[in-house]
Image 1: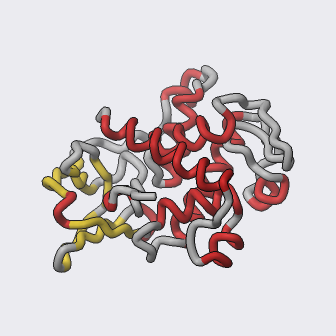
Image 2: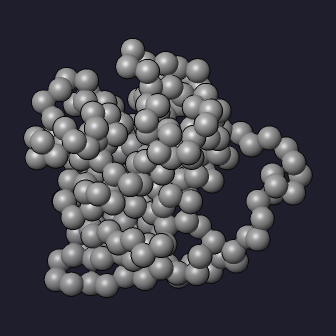
Image 3: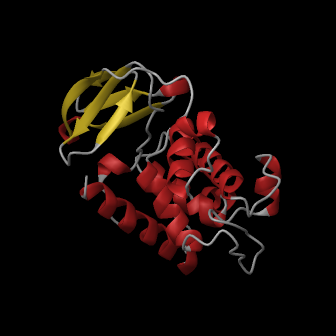
Length: 213
């Protein structure tokens, strides 16, 4: 499976932090606190001490982030219930993930059905297994907010786990579906049709969404 290099380790920092944007040649923007250029690679330093490396040729330019941090979210002040888009936006930002990636995982995992249950016992929008939910302190897997919070945290952990690999996104998605143990055992994408199909579905949707930017 071919994956565009720029997306192989794609991680975004949360909005509202003074820093900059790396504007890619595709038009997609990656938020970072700062960057360093070394040879043909650019290292972006993201919120919380995370880093990502992308090919220098994939970056068109850097732009300063002139936004003012928000003290509170509007829904916190008004008390209104968040929409799913707002939930995804909030927890994507907190985990440093592109919203398009989280939406792509939700679409592939549950087709946006908060009550979806797999044959293996995974539940909810991002299909959390009982043990994973317990580790992430998700008490109600059918609750969209809790499920997306747990799912984004888990995907963030997996991206960090494989961050040194040029195929970090592919490996993280494979581990999300099949478990990191199997990815490590096979030293790459496991030879399972379900996992390979899941990774392809997520990547295809993710690339389509980012191409629209």
